[in-house]
Image (cartoon, rainbow, N blue to C red):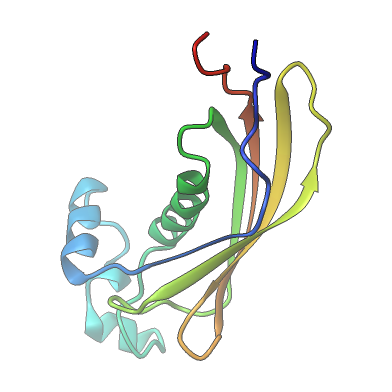
Length: 144
């Protein structure tokens, strides 16, 4: 009988961007959202150079990068937090890096992992600092 395994806890990197259609779809789904996310004029009046991507989309995309790393592995998102440092313009590429910060011992086939993340724009400007706590469960051995 083979032993159950957990995916390795390691650095996770990825990238994403949201175009105008993505933002329009999101705003339609949430009933309009904040007007700064759909109006260049309002964004400029707020002191922004461009229409910003909604923070919930940035957070979700960053967490999805982490989730893809553990695809095929039972995983639960326990907690996520984001602190935004700079606006992310629609169409801007965002690079995300997740770094494992703390890993609990394996107990009852489960392990909790704390990750810290950075969303960076071209030029390495930090747009968001994130933290996520995930719970990983052992995958049953093949053939069981």
